[in-house]
Length: 385
Image (cartoon, rainbow, N blue to C red; front, top):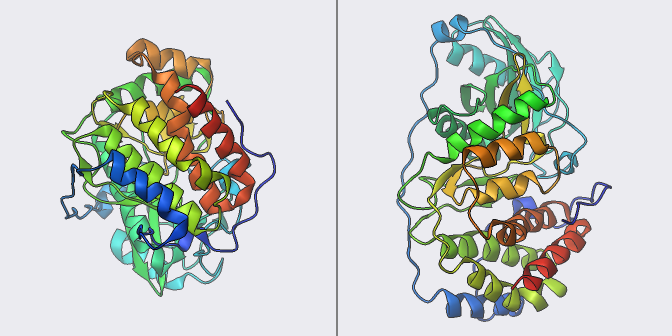
């Protein structure tokens, strides 16, 4: 399995994270290859989007005080920790009085006028430990444009919590104040996964994946990092993954100036993807969607926790494939998952294809430093055709 560059790639000067999803046009030279192939292998779209979203119910102040809050921090030093990923960060410490007032009103308790300390490791938003009458909070803050991203993350955490499988941070508040968006979560005392926690995570992730929907997709779009992630309801997994994962990222990469070898291999890649996924009809499992090592940890008592999701319903193999992409998950995790719910035949052949989605997203977020990794995965996918 190819590995990510050890050095942190510089953020693309084209601000890929701000880009809206491109629309293919016959007159656009760079997208011609992907467009021709989409028309060829996806002649009759079977994706039916059902708009509408549910408001997230925030806990009452009594609930906040009833359950002890614990600390929450992210593990730094991983590929996602490169700075400047989205260009939508907040103004920094000492500038969040309006957020503090909003939190105090929503939580119905005292909240410090400014955060106590920054929490490092994030690259999309500023993260802070914030003191309140209900205990410490973990609060993400960004500019107002990130409000929808935070709303989707809150909805994703709520969806995962409903599965009652793997622990996720409890959402306390989400909104906008003073031109800033915020998301407040319980403060969890995170530590690296022990062998016991890895085993439990494997067992509980299999349990989470057994929560299924009738179709692939989700009730709302969200983001993967800061890149838009489209989740229209689809009957066919292969069509969903090719159209709303691979083609989307390929077109975005071409739009951001990363053509060349990617454009030259796109026809062959998408044909191979269609072959690999033809006849593969997995149940639409509840997915974390961004399950690399930095988005999983443990709390006291060896209980595993997952966070920063990009939730949708799809092939559970995508979650497992990503656990192998950057490392961070040991043999205890994989053995426990396999014992609870073995992966079907062919999962190894599909893993590189599924991980290509995430590496292409890294190309679009961080720049050309990940192109070599992307091309290695493409070569691996084509070699298994």
